[in-house]
Amino acid sequence: MTGAATRKATPDDIEALLRIEERCFDADRISRRSFRALIARPTAETIIAEERGAIVGYAMILFRKGTALARLYSIAVDPDAKSRGVGTLLLNAAEQAAFDHDRLLLRLEVREDNQRAIALYKRHGYRPVGRCLDYYADHSDALRFEKTLRGGAPLSTSVPYYEQTTDFTCGAACLMMALACRLPEVRLDPVLEIRLWREATTVFMQSGPGGCEPFGLAVAAREHGLKSSIIVSTDEILFLQSVRDPEKRMVMELAQTDFRRRAKAYGIGVRHRGFTMKDIRSALRRGACAIVLVSGYHMFGKKVPHWILAHGDDGRHIMIHDPWVEGDIGETVADAANVPVPYDIFDRMARFGTSSLRAAVFLELDPDKAADFSGSSSSKRVEKRTD
Image (cartoon, rainbow, N blue to C red; front, top):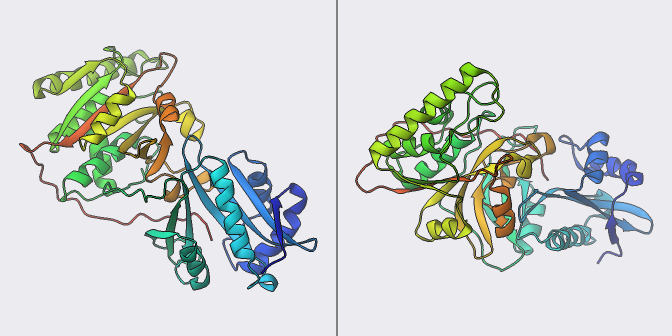
């Protein structure tokens, strides 16, 4: 048993952490700059194990803003300290840190051939939840594990996850995930992602390619085999506040007018009010899912409209798929798929702009209509790092 103790890392520990990185990893090492940034970041915590004044290991945990999810970004033990319980000590400390941050889940990725680490995680109650192909710099695969820290019951979902491939296709990615869950012929791939975006976009946003709006998403869902309905807090044309160019405004207005006319022709239900948590939870209970407009500021620090897919409810959290993975801060799919968001935080983030716009598109299988898809499947390459 180890005589080591744990504490939070400080910038003074970086040299020792770099030595451990060099001794433990041949590639995918955390740099000096990254260590400095991660130690200082409010949404990360680095814990070191110290034995007789020497640092013998560390664990780094990331906390996704606005969620009840934590991720073990990296864990390493100096080779000279192996088999003394340091790994167990650090894993326990990481779990405690996640618990203290009111996190429901702790996730991690590990090399598929790292049997020692896999055995450690399994002994501590982690369950396999996925596999990432070509994950590390040497093209080896990773296994994804997860542990429930509160409540004890695993949180699973039949809704597949898809990471958006562009900055502007979050709505299309959410719609594609909902379609794939309910229509087995649907295959998640970038071709279908762009097709759905073209069918649901407002054509222009603030600049560059357009984003999706609720009527366009509802119409596209209806045309591809799902029953859809909308709750939106205004009957005005959406997302015009920051668009100054009169031609862009005109095109957006015409596109949205078309979507609204088609929604009416299809008999898509529309309620002009702000949705409530009761609306979301009632829909999830009956087996529907909801594409919900949120402020990107709450998710990744940018004041842009963003769509996420709400697909589950555990009695305390709304479970979401967020199609955006913030790679610049080391996130992977493990930070964005099947993420628990506390009710109060979900309710706050589901508003956009100074008008606190609220919009949700509710989707469920329409037994009277099914689309014929012939999309091809594809595996998304993930290149982020965790050990």
